[in-house]
Every structure is written in C-alpha cells, then in structure tokens.
Image (cartoon, rainbow, N blue to C red; front, side, top):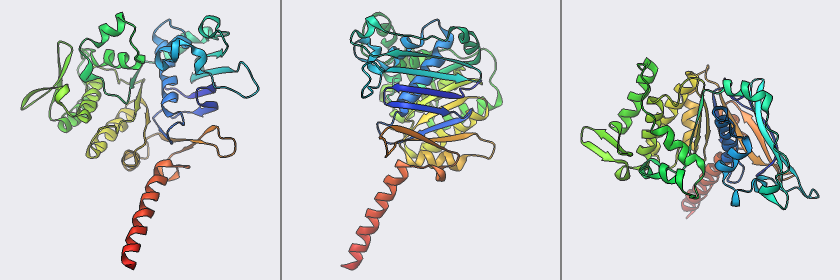
Length: 347
C-alpha cells in the first residue's frame, strides 16, 4: 500500500505542512531551501522503520545527521515559544507512524517527548513492502570498503549513503523476471551499452568492449546502472517506494527520456515514486510521456509571500504547476535572449 499523506509541524524548514500524496509519482519542485529533500527523507525514514524496531526519531537522526546527534536541531524555531514541538507523521491508509519532540537546552539527553505510534506500528509494518532512497551524490564508485567502514567507525555520512549501497549489493531474485521487468532492464542496458557486474565490492559495466570499472565511467551511466541493479534485485517491486533526489545530476539530457520512461513504467507496476528536481527537461519529459491512466502529482513548494513560510500547491499536469520556479527561470532567459535580439536588430 502506498504512502497517502505526510504531516509536518515545526520540523526543519516547515512551520506546518499537510500534504496528500499520489499513489503513483510525486514530483517535488521548488527553489532551493523549500524542503524538497527534507520531505523525501522524512517519508523514507518512516518507511524504513517498518522493517525494524528502531524508533522514528532515531532513524530521523541517522538520515538527517543533525550536529552532535541532537534531534532538537531538527525543530524549527518559533518566535515567542522557547521550546516548540516538532511533529512528524506519515500515513499509509489508516495506519501511520511518526514522532513528536521538543528543542531544549539539554538537547539529546533531555529529549522531552517521543510519541512512537506503537498501536499502529504493526499495521504500518505490513503496509510497506520496501523503500529505496537514491541520494543526489552517486555512491557506487566509492563502494569498496565503505559499508564495513560505516558499520565500524564514526564517519560523518548520512545513513542514506550506506542504505543505498546495501540495496545495490543485493543479489538477483530467484524467480524468473516478468516481461515488464525484462523490458525495463533491456531498455536501460541499451542506454548504458551493457549490464552491471560486481567483483569484490567493485562495480563494472560489462559490455561488448569488456568490463569498465565505475570509477572510469561517466556518472550519468552509473546512475542508470544503479537503477538497473535495483530493478534486477527486486528492490523496486510492487508495493515498494522509490525516492530519487535530483535524477538529472550529471545525467545527459538525452537520457532523461529513458529515466522518465522507466519511472512511469515502475509506477504502472505498483511502485510509488518520489522525485525532487530542478530540471525543466525532466518535468517536460515526464509530462509528455504520461498516459491518461498514470497517477502523477506535481507538488510545488514555495515560500508564501504573506508569512514567508513554506507552502505547497499540487497540480496534475506540468502546465498547471503554480508557482513554477523552473518555468520562471526559463522565461527570464527567454526574455533576456529576446531583448538582446531586438537590441541587435535596432543597431
């Protein structure tokens, strides 16, 4: 069952947010500092505790990595309230889980309140099949030795980097691939020029020209390689949730179409998708490839001009996104180009 709703109050950049989610693809757009990545990390953290006994607050600390492990630093300061309470709740139908906590002077040692939704956790755990978070920074080229180092030493990395390597190293499923899976794998293989292989924790692109280690491979190809691995090993199976932060980073725009085609097909096969982007072509590719039965929501995060707090508007088509910081940037460029052309014509 997909995530259906997320509620945040006094959490990081958010004063208050109550957002209904699409069971298909949720596209997060907005200027820097509007909380796109934070929103995905919250949802991912709550998905992850469905398979462990870890409390929501502890997972949030590992994923957000506030200074000193002080969860109080995740609380948004409120004028006139010395110890505001942060609230984080994520829903999956009638089941939900989350936490509430306060910021105080003692911080971690005197954490005032952690409201772990115990009675609802069993239902929550049964609702989520699995979750995967692809961070903006590519990690497969740095994989050898990283997981053992992270497990044994205190190193300053958000847990999403160790988590994505755990997913990437999973072996393939025993059962034969369905036709849809074969098609997606073949589509990505065609774009990459081969398959991904693993030797001694090192990733290679194996094609007609032999094996190319990921450290010598273009980063955009590594991103497609990761997507190929996640589909092949069953991490992105029906009922699971995929979070992808800035898929456009270091990916050739000619490959955007392949990436969006794969995400739409995953959505049609029961995978809920979240992606945060700053890229016009990504949005247009997704909008143009959408079919009538696809369930895609564009969530536009912005600073409300009245109070300055972050707000959100949801649209079902690209042209209906409002406000649209990406479109505004392209309009500014077009206006500059037009002004230059007219000025040149006048001379």
